Length: 145
Image 1: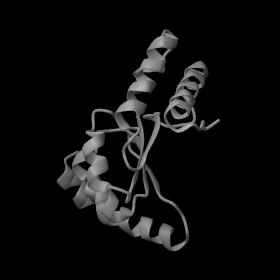
Image 2 (image 1 turned 180 degrees about the vertical axis):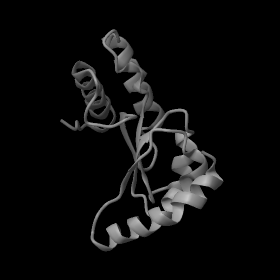
Image 3 (image 1 turned 120 degrees about the vertical axis):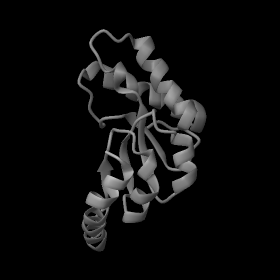
Image 4 (image 1 turned 90 degrees about the vertical axis):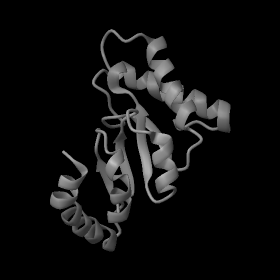
C-alpha cells in the first residue's frame, strides 16, 4: 500500500495502541518484513521501539541514520537462505554480509527477516547463530550464545 494509505488507515490507531503499551511499560516490537522505508520516520514517531523484519531491500544504512537510537532495526539477513538446499557456505556468506554491512550501525540487530529465533529449516538457524557469534567474537570479543 502507499505511504499515504498507511498514514490514513493505520498511523493513528497504531499510535494510540503503542502509547497505551508504553504507558504500561511494554517495549513495542513491530513486525514488518516488507519495504517500509517510506514510513520509517512515522514508525519511530508513533513509538515503534523495534522494527523486526527489516528486509535488505530497504536502505538499512540510511534508515539507521534517520532513526538513530529511536528505533532498533532487527533483520537484514535475507530469508532466501532458509531452504533445504542452501549450502552452509551460502548461509554463512549472507549472514556475514549483513553483519559486516550493518553491524557498525547504531541500533542494529542481525536476524533473518521474518523472525528470530526461528527458521523454517532448523539447521539454517544454527549456522546463522554460529556465524553471528563468530562475527561478534572477531569484531567485539563476545558471542551471543
